[in-house]
Image (cartoon, rainbow, N blue to C red; front, side, top):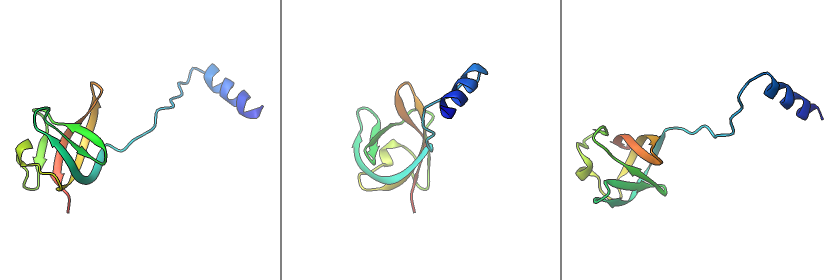
Length: 92
């Protein structure tokens, strides 16, 4: 009952509660596949898309430089229902 009363008190105060998980916006792993036609690649089962704002570092200059099997670190954002790669760099 205390939990219910506390929750009602918080909700009644106008505070907003969110059940959305907080996720890190970077991921490291091996490129499993690349789809050149959709300008996307998969790391750890997650498909990442690149766009004109994607930054490439550590010897990578463009999407064409990505290869299956490379270990990368991807900094990304969630936009328009997709994971958009903001920065891609080779992982040491």
